[in-house]
Image 1 (spheres, helix red, strand yellow):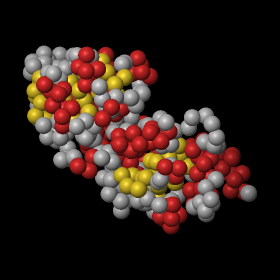
Image 2 (cartoon, helix red, strand yellow; image 1 turned 45 degrees about the vertical axis):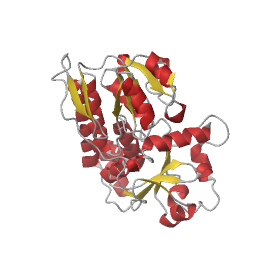
Image 3 (cartoon, helix red, strand yellow; image 1 turned 30 degrees about the vertical axis):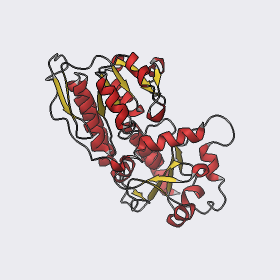
Image 4 (spheres, helix red, strand yellow; image 1 turned 90 degrees about the vertical axis):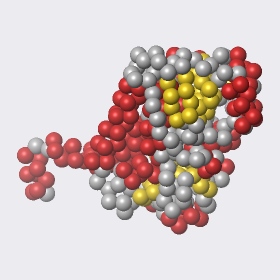
Length: 332
């Protein structure tokens, strides 16, 4: 199950999206949250989609799109979810459907959705045509970077008649990213290694043109695999050679054996890696930094605290030091 989980994470991160035509913005949407007129959007595969009114029933196959639906206040319109859609907790009460080759078209049709949200390459052209023939509009949502997340939120907001709320979510993310960027003091000399698939299944990392890389730059640290384009497979030797100052792993822990952090700390030959020697390993296993969704802002906060937390605490302690304590310190 763990292997299948990691495979799904990698797919959701966009490893198969290299065939995508690129992002397309929302061309038009409902005038406001209460609009009941026709909705026209351009999905992220460049396909023009028109609905007579905002969607009332929707099936979302990817975890990121489920998160977006709840973030914009449209979670109650979700009538079907993909297997790994697990946030927020209430989404688990929504009927589960398979995607890809295992999709049961009749099962989806029985849910009677207006729209099926999926990632690029999630279904075959034949499956998409069958869904369209049944009157279900198929919409492709495929964010690979932060700007793509904004586009996906706006597009889904338009589909659901929640333009205003979608704009608020995007603005909140932008505010958080701007705040973190402004207070980050790093100059890019320290590096971070993002491990998106553990050693057991072959090392994969986030390279350039990914939201993880963008967040690293935002926080003033260098992605030590910025020369990799997108999500790519790497070797242990490459990690050891590049000697990261920080390691971020998104490996899940199921309560048995060593934790993901302990496993990395115990790897043979990794003992001289700076991040291992300094025990600077952050395990984000709740998908805050691994899904192109609104919680990327939360993930960025967690990474900021991990990189700068100790410095901030020392600064606060110094600021609270009394004049007498300062004098005593000088005297010492």
